[in-house]
Amino acid sequence: MKILHVIANLAARYGGPAQAIMGMTKSLAEMGNEVTIYTTNQDGEGVLDVPLDVPIIKEGVEIRYFPIQNPRVFGTSLPLARRLRSELKQHKYDIVHIHSLYLFHGAVAAHYCRKYEIPYIVRPHGTLDPFLYHRNRKKKAVVELLFENKNLDYASALHYTTEEEKVLARPFITHDRSFVVPNGLYLDDYQDKVVAGSFRMKFPETENKKIILFFSRLNFKKGLDLLIDAYATVASMKDDVHLVITGPDNEGYGETVKGWIQEKGIGDRVTFTGMLTGQEKLQVLKDSDMFVLPSYSENFGISVIEAMICGLPVVISNKVNIFRELIEYEAGEVVNCDSTELAISMMRILDNPDYSEQIIENGKRLVESQFQWSKVGESLNNNYKAILNM
Image 1 (spheres, rainbow, N blue to C red):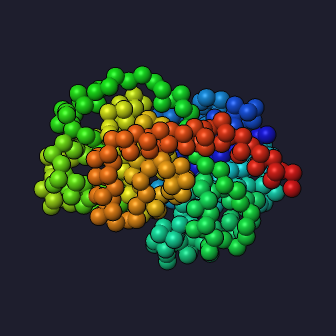
Image 2: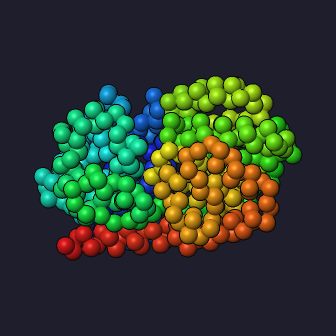
């Protein structure tokens, strides 16, 4: 098959979606498909240093970047639109996979797919979770009237990454054409040997401390208010803990978080590292003792499965959409979006090494059984074929 994926951006600062699409497309290419990604060169307020509208081959996948234009907030790129029109008119692709809603790339890709009768799939990326769906509702309603309702109504299928995401989206969708295929990992990427203690050497304030790790974007939906409140409680009872907050701060939200930390008087017991990738990411995962993600909304949570395969006990909220899988495998603590519950779960792991080891082993088993890209790619491939054979 000739498969086209369209996404607003691929810069690392955008977190899980940018990471997931690379694994997704690589796994499809490994099955013998011709896979292409169209995206923009957007990187925050700047741009990526990449050639424009020139094929770049990365791990068997062709990537074409197009210039981001104003208004940037919508991922606007007229050259991207022109290329889509040209290629889809010529039927260069058998099927198109569109990532996320309410953005320029989705509007034009779905429009030209309908015009030239090419089946397309829409992956909502959690935007149909009620927590996010009702946010900025008036603006979204305008976009829905202009194009998004039509895009969803005429899609060959919607791609959800968890059953929970599908359930949450149901009130806002007029049809049931959908499939559930999760994100995944290439497990070998997490077997690279990193020297234990490498992260702690760079951040000596963590020496002889148990590191509680937050590893995600600094964003309003991530539950950092809950984490700071819960951590302050834990820190008041334990002298040997240190909170590490790792991730990009795309919207300046970190200043708000630092304000909460100062109010709690725990500034010397919290470290911000910024975004870490590659070996540095593995180092912080290797040296940490617990992973916490108390999000108010989380479509999948790829950082959760990264933490599990790296041997960390995890604590997540029941708004992180893989929480049901964690409960089934007894692979971590799942709490309501409540700071008291969060503190209790963190203390339970800190105080019970045997229990911690058990959920670590269960977490690894869960990732190995359900979240490997080889299995994910096969499932995606089968769904594409089913759509094309309809």
